[in-house]
Length: 339
Image (tube, rainbow, N blue to C red):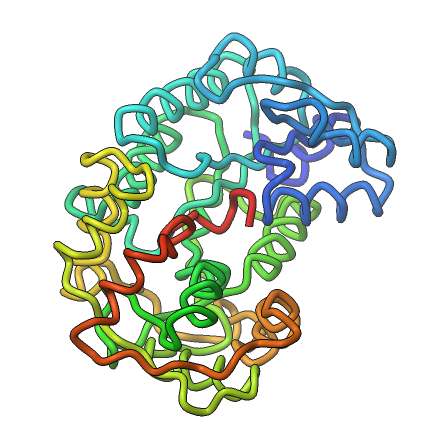
């Protein structure tokens, strides 16, 4: 039986394949591997968004993530791959994409993969989009000969960028999440850095999971206080919105009713403690970027330079203003998309 070191030797001259290369985590991984002189194939639906990597020496490969034949070709001869599902359109599409990815992994003979999953992916149902990641994990685990590391990442800090318009226009940060429930929050840069190093090292075997829990747990009230200090608006407050009103807000901005329901299911699972981390926090699953640093580096530069004084909204009218001014257009863009 070959040791992991022998297996690495067999694929030493292969290429790294990065799905979602133009996203927040995939771009970090692609750039890191290119900086190390590795051969990289970046995969995406739009060739134009891959050109920044091609200029650095990567091979650009256009494919839809539900096209198993194209993905099989992309994975052929690869040393390892970074696997992920794109932002949710529907649970049905999630299943089609994970079917195609797992079929391509099996048919191409890929030996190593790092798979972007989510904390809470141990739960088989009732967690919204995370249910699809549970399914994706199970499909990859069923492939013999594949060494796969599932990265169960915490709630992305970048999800909070959707609040910028609300902060500017209404003077509050509102969401469906409980105000005082502590959540692990992580910067997508830290996810990308961790995944890139594990891909370079290929120091895992079999089927493994690793939660990535960010620098520390934060409640939404605490996160809002950090934002308030970071933008110099100490009166900024957090308000929990009712589920049915958040669902209405989502549908008014173009979500299908079913897609909105899937996100509400995830918020409910978080609030109920169903979607929660399983590993005790440790140096191995904690990452360096604090929420304070994230606010300074990623959120504050997006706040208008001349932010008008906050206009505190009466509690009962906060979401109404939110709806009327159409601030929900970015409420839950998964952080590995275009944010």
